[in-house]
Image (cartoon, rainbow, N blue to C red; front, side):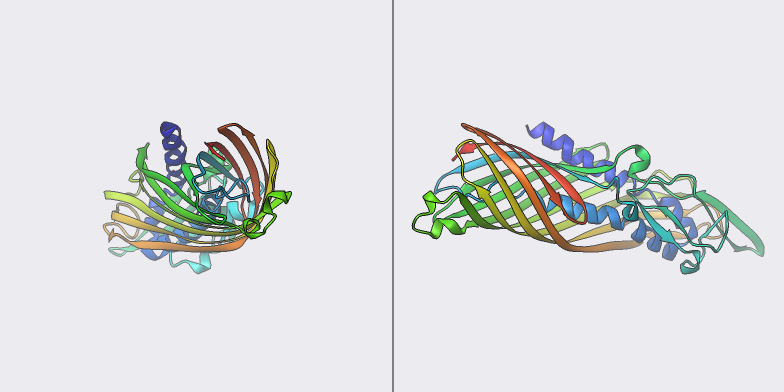
Length: 338
């Protein structure tokens, strides 16, 4: 089980950050590189926040004192039909040096880290020692360009019942490595079942709960491969924090139950671009940038989900679908008592 969690979660980060290989844009200067990287990575950061804000519950019926459940959870956040997230408008007039080879000076849509637009040629030019120097290079594509239209994640989660309808939760994975990406996850949650406070709660056909969950993800990825940029220790370090607030209702049947919820997600993604970047071609040749910039993306939005849970003794299976700015499919294998 732990090996599967390692593969799913670490693979998700190696796939995501591999698309953030925008080193060549440093050939246009650090200001242009920062602006491009900010727009390029924004949809990816947003999708990751929504991804990790899910999976906090599979019922509104809180466990009794001593009841527990251990879960292996997987999430898939799709963006295949999110054309507005797969591209962004790059206007050369907003850049100091970057421009398109075809139709220079005219704004056009280019691929974000989620997109699939290939072959977009740009150039920078300027004076070096009295001579006009021009360098052309291709902008990076994104995940869809690799045939991937979703962001995956996976982790272990546990929950324990306390008194009076209260249940505490935790999700955890130590920092692990997979194909150049390292990632770790830690989260805590709290669920309170309001129907447990009623005198005849055992007779009610449904349960109603409030669930709050916090997840902190830390990861880094080495991306030193570039044609126009040399240097050392080139990497991204990412910190992602999400809060999820949910109102949940579910049926209370012996074997199969249905649940749904309305929620609010808020979070922040910070990507620090670190290392040494030495431009080897173009008008900025020999310019050196050390730990050049940090990119922050704040996210918030309303979500709603619906799902089902099958109980077979100590073994349970659940699946649900969450609608929001990014939609997420959640699947859980659960083991526990009550």
